[in-house]
Amino acid sequence: MTEQALFDTTAPAVGDASDLATLVAAFASAREQVMKILRGLDAAGWLRQGVSPSRGALTVEAYARSTDAHDTQHLRQIQDHSLDAFDASLAGFERARAETLAFLRALPPQAVEHLAQMAACRAASASPAR
Image (cartoon, rainbow, N blue to C red):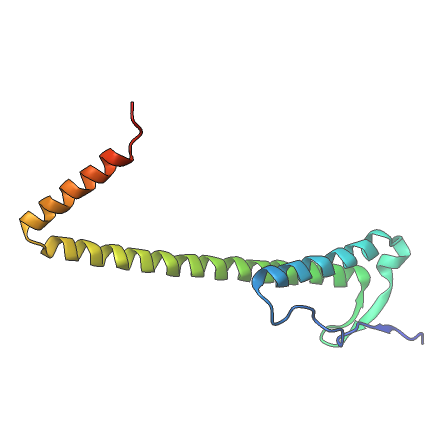
């Protein structure tokens, strides 16, 4: 029985405590290194087997496919997180807008007219001279 390679699980993860941009850059760099190795493989290289502690014996091809699916899952999580952050910002904006409208609706008519006149003056002074 030939000894099979064991995939390294102890390699340090660069940038774990960093901001999203640093983490994405570290991820891209790691994947580029993997792609460099994979591009250099011949047919026999793709069929070589190693042992993943979490998945057992895998060919390089199966490991590459698994990594691709795993990466895609994490990229979707990042997109979902980004959308959640955007939604939260949008919700905050909508809440502030609603509070402003409620405030304006509660003002007496004279105050609303005064604010409208001030806004018109600002707009007129901001427009370019002809």
